[in-house]
Image (cartoon, rainbow, N blue to C red; front, side, top):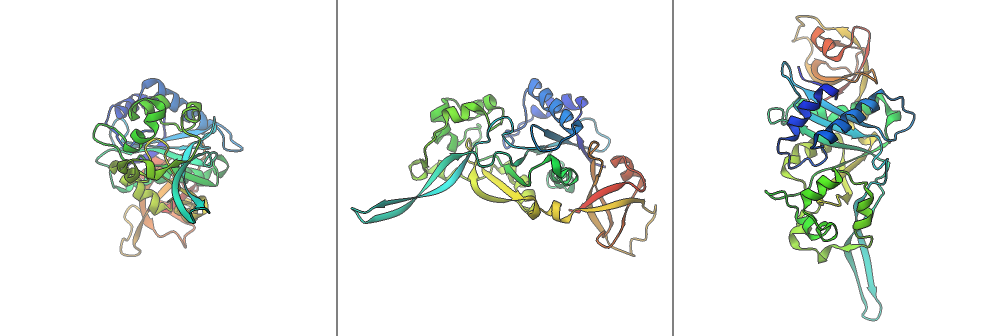
Length: 345
């Protein structure tokens, strides 16, 4: 049984092994041991903290495979984007240009550096292994971050966004970066990502990026074509997020031009569909013909010991309890009478 749980110090070696795997569509996972240790320690401290309002907290979850050492997936959620600075993105704008002398009026597509997503809660660092790609467990890992937000709403904003990696070529080059960012940073895309550590809130961004609108028609055709497009390896994340209720809006990533999806929590399926139920022990040999089984993501409702799994049980809309097998209860570290939250997947 796959389990999603908070990262632990003992996962550092496994995260180093993951970092050695080519992940062209995931720039937000730390790659060096120093940064991995820092992120793990920050996550452990965040889960342990008693929080009144979202601030510097960052929560890293891992997907653990049954009977296997190591981990097979990661997903993170930051309480407040830009909490130690400002989160920068490009906003898609339309600028009206008028010449009364020539009697000309037209609209020009422009990109404007902005900080409007600062303070939103940010989902990032989603990765699963090839075997788990497209499975219910991948959906569980993506959704588990929001299930934790349902359990602890005071830790997060009411609005969430997700930056998805943009289009890059086989060597890691980005046509959008080459047309814009490279001219100001004077370095390759991957080098810039390493310098910035996948973040979008460093002071050097506002120091180097243009503060004036960038006219899109002046960019090369391949850069324009890349705007708002996702890296092929990000399609799984995109599909899971759009099924959840996220939508592409007015913002794109300032480095690779990838789309930024966002949503208010009230429009997300996890928030609107989460059911709180008490645990009951499932029959060892239930009558399968009596009631069809439905697949749910189930999470322990203990804020400081979050765990989540996928299981099947009878539809819960009209139920007070949820029947969980002994194995599922053990994986969640719950017992009969404890409270869990359940979301259909």
